[in-house]
Image (cartoon, rainbow, N blue to C red; front, side, top):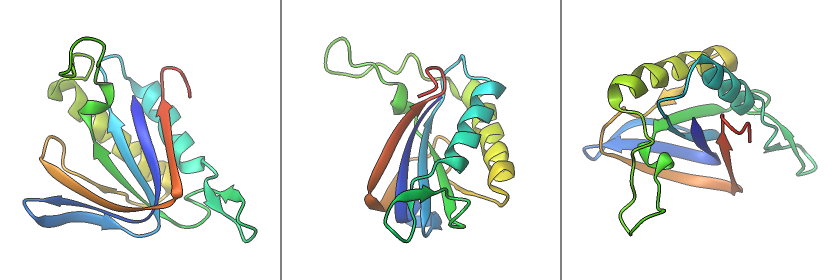
Length: 150
C-alpha cells in the first residue's frame, strides 16, 4: 500500500458537485492498493498514520499525533499512486489492484484506522470521480509505502 498523507486545516471530497464528506483539522490520506497488500500492510500503515507526530506543540515543534490533537482523518482511494511512468508518456496502472481485490482491502483499512484512531473517520467513495479540496497545513506532506516500511 502506498499513501500520501497531508496535514490539513480542512479537506473535503465532492462527487457530482456535492460535498460527500469533509473534515477540519486533521489528515487527508490518499491510498493506493496493489495485489500483494494484506492485513499486515493494513495494520502497519494504520498504526503509523494514527501515531505520526506531525502536529505542532506550543513551541511549533512537530510533537503531536492526530490522536493527540483530536484531529480527524479523511481517507480517499487513489489507484494512480501505483502509476508507472517508465515507458512512454501515458502512465501504466498495471500494479494497481483491480476493484475486486482493492475494495475489500480499502474497507478493511477503513475499519482498522477507525479502531486505531478510536473514532469514525471520513472517506471518499471507491471508484467515483471525486474532487478533493484541501488547505494543506505547513505544508506537511508525507509519502509512505508499506512494503518498504518508509
